[in-house]
Length: 455
Ligand code: TRP
Image 1 (cartoon, rainbow, N blue to C red):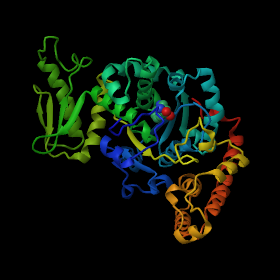
Image 2: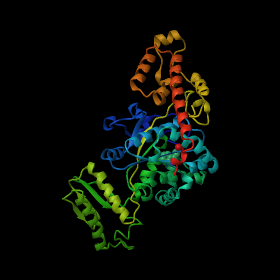
Image 3: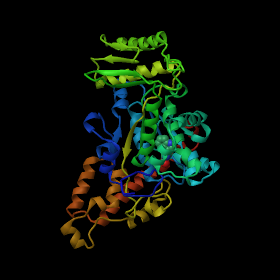
Image 4: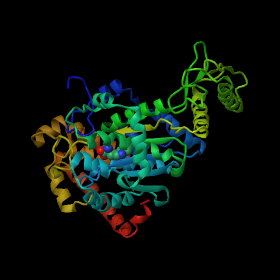
């Protein structure tokens, strides 16, 4: 591929985060807008997002909002997988309810894993670690894609809003792509949107913390959502916002549009006055309805009013029989390098540390890890080490050293040559040992209480 792209199932490890953000319109993280940024956010490891202001302002107001994320139970859970759980935990700490999908259908579709195997792996490898990592069981629910009919139903229904050529251009699917694989992203759309259904918490902002490789699914979801919405909001020509009806197959009758295209004026007026009522209730005294165009202009409204208006219109849509879905927000983490310098991969145990690796095996792996040190001690003292290429340092940064000033001290002493490559590895090993032991202890504490996390 000449262009920079993202393949959620690919094994490409060249990730140019700036180019990706640029090309797909990700917003860079703005730390000044976040009260107590997490470790990953402070270190720019969660580096970009879409619409993050929506869940964050809900948090600020103390309004409900949710997190939905997921992992494929494709093998053993490793360090790289902890990042979405860490992200989810942070949102939970500021008030979110958390839902985690076990993507067992996706494992069937893309890894050829059986559902039975997926269930076993998920419980032993994943759910136990979600518990150990400190998600709050009272505000967390883990479910399997294969056993949540509402997710599959949404996937099916929303499938009407996309087609093969869109999926082809997002994912590179072609004539030989098996159909389970084609369905997998739609199931993910169902995952992401179903917490907004009344049975799963109802209409509220949902944020999806993921690795940036998952952004194609977020784009697909947001695109589908925008097609389902019954009311559009855009900037009016002169100033203010303009609400317009989006007439489509499933709302034609409600919106007073006959088969022949004739407008039932009284029905249309009713709809428009429901919109006006909402706007007045929100405090906009001056609005201009135009029933025959199906629009309402709000001259005094600004961008910052959009979310509140959107919310109420989605409620109205629901009361009229629509799905009333809000576009999900998302946040994206960078990928930690693999131990051997390339990509981390569960199918190559030497590239990563599994969460249930023994301390001995962890030590061996880190000792062998790719280093940013100089070939000789003399050169290292003189030239200093390269933190960017040093796995031990990077793992301290991504996973094991929570204290920013300590991390900074380590980085500058490495760069100046006063910390040697072997010493860096030793520090990483010590902190990793502590980290893994604590995790394993927590895992055993939770081992007979995992059902508290399962829905
Ligand atoms: N596709 C994700 C992965 O490969 C798993 C997943 C399924 C997911 N559904 C999701 C992630 C919904 C985030 C949101 O790991």
